[in-house]
Length: 336
Image (cartoon, rainbow, N blue to C red; front, side, top):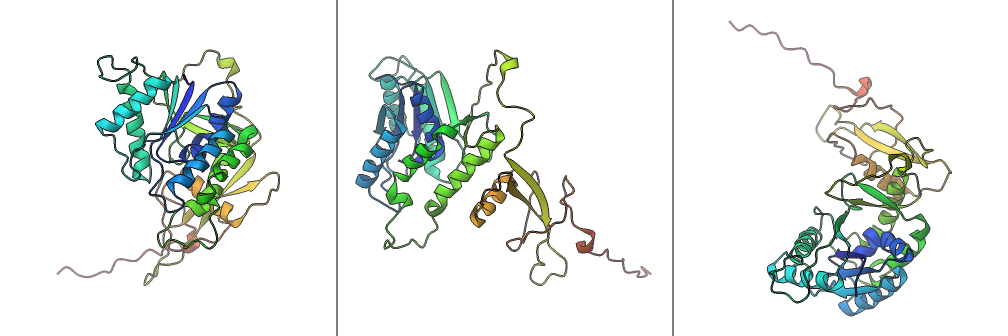
């Protein structure tokens, strides 16, 4: 089988969360798509490899992918070893995808950033003629990186608005991860699964807004894109924003034992022009998303309450005069 588009990720459900809408859109355009899970997710806090395999099969069906496979790399130990790179190269030679989507090379989970290196180097090795590996040499034409979790500016964003609901169903096909039994014992270690669905929905709305649509998935490519017709470039430079961003400075409470206030805390509060209901969690996540764009560090000692003090742009952060520390007069002492 030959694929047009192959997404490689560390665990089952990673692809659905980061680029599932893009795969579905490609499949509906007639392209043959595929997913390569490097591990079976056997080290996950929830579910079992057998349960997750069934969930992955259902998600693949919803996303209309033509092929899905598992490489068998140990979960929690994804490494760009020679053995694993050859295994990826073998799959690439077999499927011959024109475009490959990889995770971004910086991430919280070690498996995710190692998956990026492993996937890239496996694709490179697949093109070496002298490599002692079955199959004809082949190297993908294009490597893309999914940046939904990354704090980087994407090269482009794919509009997934018409496919958002089916993408959401594919994510929720992993019921062991996102809809666990209420009787299941909770872990003492924080895991993001309880809020991941909401996080992904909000991020899809954020990146969609950047290109003037409702939902989008962001990608980065290391090479420059070629543009043939600049007159027909998409994304309006002056478009009615779906969201209005309003910035406020929220003064933080004094730290323990300190008389002066801490640095102000900058938040971005997003209001919907359509007066859509926004949950408290969505407000908080929106603040976190937009604060990643601030070019200077921020600090606060408590969760800020909304204030209406306007922001003066540019570092250092603006501190209202009423809260600014009073200058201390130097003590006049004789040096003689």
